[in-house]
Image (cartoon, rainbow, N blue to C red; front, side, top):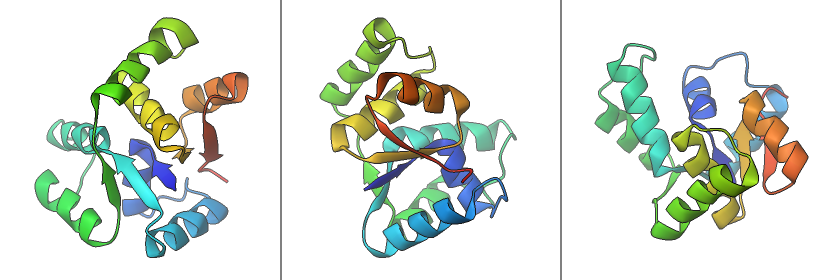
Length: 139
């Protein structure tokens, strides 16, 4: 499965040119094969960005979420195991302070997914630690 970071889902929705052709192809193909998902926290981050007027979802966040789920995007809930793993990433694995990113990365590790992201901090940490497989979505 490919797990989308918040920035990738927002950019895919907006047809942002920062998402590379290869990544766009892999993600689009994965949706058709039930192989693309997001951590539930992605919807939290997207809703906050929408309400803070830093992202335009084009509709209320609830409707935006439901539209993505109807199109085949899988939502992975936050479990206690994922929450503890997220805290461990920061406390013992040198991951940065952003709790949203911690949860998204822990979700990718827990679900054995490839994390699609454009976030340089995540890409650098993943290259250094090899704890999660990443897809640089700019490619």
